[in-house]
Figure 1 (cartoon, helix red, strand yellow):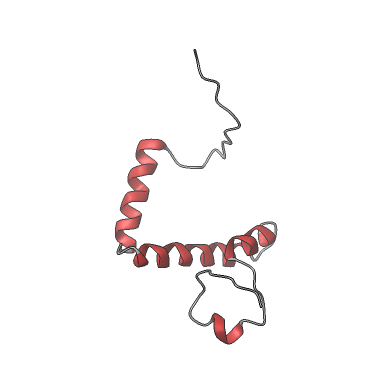
Figure 2 (cartoon, rainbow, N blue to C red):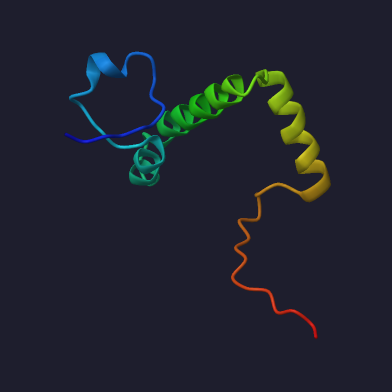
Length: 88
């Protein structure tokens, strides 16, 4: 028996035989194909579901996202932080 302990879409029990992968793994696998938009939509649905589980609306989530984008920037430049050296 495999224990998943993961959030899944409402109809997953009906179609569980298709795949047991998490949404992020599916996105990564599809990231170089035309199906990538489908996997991005699935990830977004997971985010919306988690927000609702915590009592937030999609509108509240979007407001916080926009505020953080204004204050700290987006991810458009695809910057990757490797390390930070502290000054003594």
